[in-house]
Image 1 (cartoon, rainbow, N blue to C red):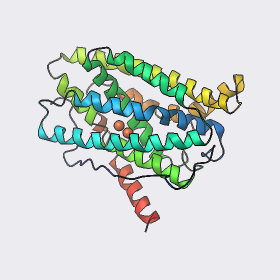
Image 2: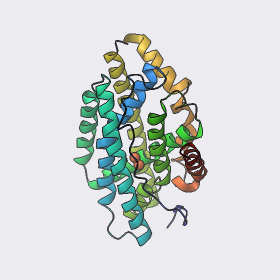
Image 3: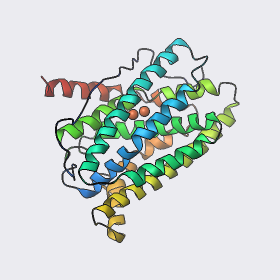
Length: 279
Ligand SMILES: [Fe+2]
Ligand SMILES: [Fe+2]
């Protein structure tokens, strides 16, 4: 299949792990930083509903998939279900620490209701674009340990575990999209995917920024200072959004596939780090 590049020796292995069940998470768990904490919490607020949507969107197109892709869809489903489970727990701890995530969750539901009102291929396209987005965030998170260095060990381990599996299953929604649109002309496939990526990127940035500002407001941090601090954190230092820009732009290149960039070394490095930590 044109553009298909998922490594033939890739195996997607769901790692059934649980985090933070016995301890409470600090209010500002990211090294006492309200801005970083608010941003990651805002991201976590989207996962339980968001990942359930990804699963449903991909599974709607599994008919006719070859055995390899069918197996990958199954493993992807298991991984995402476990991510949702852990983020439900994490969000509960954020709630116990004093944050009300419900306005952020309502926004996610609103966005999902809108895309669900369209034909199922729109949901698959949105999932395919968002999975690329998640995979490049995950790549950056593992590639530069400074992002999570200030976090408590358990919370950092949870985000790293999630990042590993996001990299591992990054081709699944994309391959399902290639399968579902195999009869489409190339131009149409490219223009739909480019439009959808622009839209989900805009919504992602607007919604996560708004959500982060809402959580900061709950901490009593408001006004231009709050805006400036969020902007600085996201775009300058540590500057996650700036750092993923190149990988984001690669999505628009002809012949793009998430596995054109094989970053499994990050998974191996993380697993080695964990086995040493728990040895
Ligand atoms: Fe996930
Ligand atoms: Fe994912």
